[in-house]
Image (cartoon, rainbow, N blue to C red; front, side, top):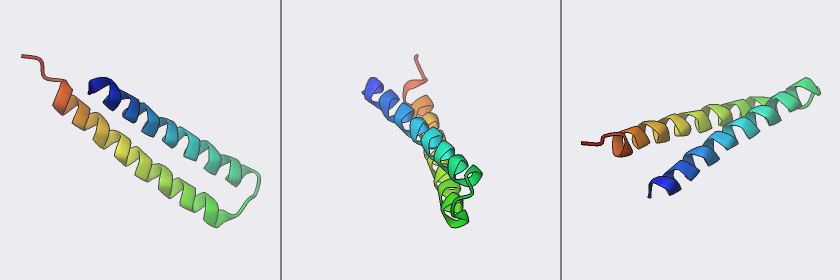
Length: 65
C-alpha cells in the first residue's frame, strides 16, 4: 500500500514539473497568454494535490509506535 502511495505522490510531482515546464516554454516562445495562464493554474492545482498527498502520507504512514 505504501509503495503504491509513493508512486502516486511521485506521479503527481512529475505532473507539476511537466505542467510548469510546458507553461514556461509557451510563455517564453511567445505563445498564447491564455494557455500559459491555464497551465499555471493547473500547476497550482497539482501542487495542492501533491501537498495534500504528502500530508496524508505523513498522517497514515508516519506514526510508528
